[in-house]
Length: 569
Picture 1 (cartoon, helix red, strand yellow):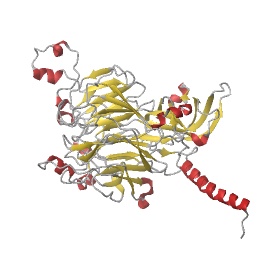
Picture 2: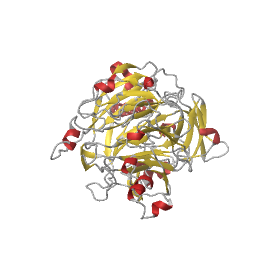
Picture 3: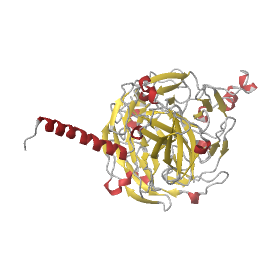
Picture 4: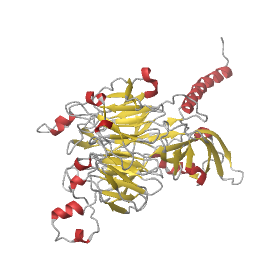
């Protein structure tokens, strides 16, 4: 067939456009909106010279400007004293000062740097936690006298810790806490306890009979453990995805039975002390969600060789093997068809964090390039944050920090879409003179979407009391200012984000849900306001009840400040 010049041009044009159209449809099916291009690689800011406490654990408390940071009472000292008169008196015996005068837990205002010390009695070293349906932190486990303790901290500025020792049936040191679809908590593993249990309600206690033996954790234990702080995620069908060492399963929490075991993820161990990092990618909902199973994908990155801890901690002179450079991506909703897709990061990383950004992409930050978890067991700080694009499954390096964030470093997504970076203590105690000194400086990182050229796309949520609560499956409306004159649905996302409890490279209960958008219209009474029609998540398995930050993202740029909302029945 002979093609004329005009026809040939048309044909070539269609050949170029049709794949783009299919790609666009595919991205929309994934819930990925169009994004503006930028070469901006982010900006670092030294936010605070001294938080007082090295942030081994970090979480935001809803509807406040408070970030909670705490380490361990076993250190006895910190860089912040209580203002009690005897604590300021140098004549007081040192043992009394260390035991009673130094803070190990602080509330830091992430807008002003103001710090308030909080008292802790039961040791929180390597503990776990999550926000409950009321927005309170429920923290479990720790070391020694804190291993069977449950603690509760409410979200008010004047609240103090409530501690309940003897609550858990087993000691939980290096354990993982997960929230179920009904709001209850389960806690998995911990040193010497390959078990799990439901966290009892406040004031109640578990007996040994309420502890459930978990064969999977016994099987994934190797000579240096490598199965502590397992990655645990609530699947959209109500089962739990549990990853330890290099293996993963789906557990039915109602029957206590394993529903499915996934293929082994090769190339070393990923759990503590080989300490890779992980996240669940955003869950994308349709405007009128009726699917029986909503897809969910898990990303597991970094880690180390199975014997890395032995080489770094027990060999003399110590050997620091290179960290793992790859990531595994798996669709856990595929069950029998699920396989790991192997991706290559720009550099090896251990002890890092995987934070889901308001855009739905993932920031890989903190950590080291060699060694293992544990005091003085890692080398070669990885100062370069990496952006993982969900749309293209590709990695991009951003601007580096100048402060090593190694063992015991943490991070959090802030309501203004910046990232709070804190912690790093590779030492047994607070040391100023060390290869990597104990770090109490706090940074903020402004990711790529803070490119000044993109500021015109930054929207502002119009505060509405009715929108403070989102009921399962129910429609609701959201008003926003800014963006284009007429907001293009192809460029728009509305994402709700459950802030994680971050420690040891694991972000417990981090979860983002992309809500289904059914319509966008101009407000009849305010020409500069657009009204977005949405539908809440269908149930608690998709979005466990509690507090979330709601972000409007337009053209790949998050709104000026997220709005705290409560998701419930």
